[in-house]
Length: 530
Image (cartoon, one colour):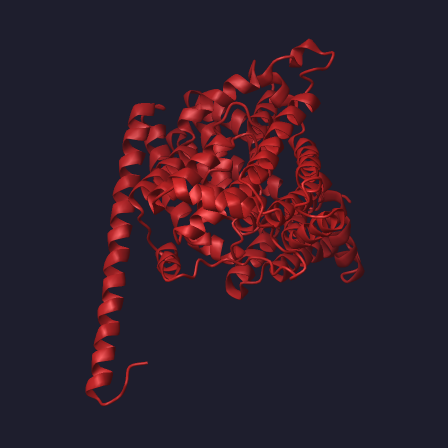
């Protein structure tokens, strides 16, 4: 399919999908509407049949953009989670963890720490942290929306500042392809101190977890959790899938541990660590050359084999029960896989068919702004593009080849900061867009309503993005002074968190007083309060 330059119309499909998703709370239909809008624009622009061309283009893009390794990974991980639960591993872990994690604050910090430690890949992070920590967060009445926020905030924001990760490999490759840098990896490392969105997101997460404070929709969701409604959407399990009472903590930790080990070994293997090319005989080079998606699929299959060896010979379940559990676990991941499939498709429609990248490139080239404003402008553009398309990798893959020559021409001393702003804006969009794969997987890993995760997380992500904008403005006018940049953005973030939290507490107190007044009035009027 040949691309068609649609100009500003290329932004319509994601806008329609996002608005419909927020209004209807129904993601699949909204994404499909966005896809068909995009392919209709493409069909009319290319002179195709508006009906046949629209449908044909939509499904052709769906086939083209599907990443089967990620689909396989999600399905096998769902199967692994299900059989571990059937064996009693999750139940035993929940009992063991709650005996050691003795407070809500400890549960929040432990969940965040686990997310930070799993920095190899964001997909792996999203589904693993939720699986392991759900029993603990439920015990201390932490909402699934809060769990999804922690997962999402320690996925891409951590991977983008970890030198050994699938993200570092992708960014390094994009930087190397520009031909302007001797080493893509060393340039990536240089961008880390100025990646304000990742740094400020982790600071905000630390403040919220240490002080157990919230504001906005998250505060309301946490109030419901305190009353016993954590907002879980666990899949209903047939009564034939009974949970063993003989499960041990190791029945969960060993399969998950082997999953991590196999993932690392798989990445090293297909990255060439044991290959014939000596250039990849180091951990950093091998991770930079690896195919993370295929390694994750291999690791899940290996972990399932380990689970089979642990569970069936000990008669925690029969062979048939194990295989039935695998099938049921795969079924539980079907909604997430469908959403991922549609999210990839709408991203492809924007990038490959309607040339959103060309529109953004022309916009950047036509904007004549002072060099000091370049980091801020790049941050805003990359954030909008990433939010609209739901992909950070696609965004920095599009923008890095544009940003490097623009920065070198307009403000050479701000090239590294401009690249950091590109990555930061890409992460912001990926972090909070309803059609982002990591956002979808975070809500899936936490067993949380997807739109609830988006709506509760968006104010937090937007606050951090606003503080980043202040930081990049300072960086531009101070010639990339790191101390002044962080010295401005971090205090602004802390003050903003304090302000919005106290504003939320005041609103909650007002609601309680209003409720009490209404109740008293009902009693005085001779009516029983409802």
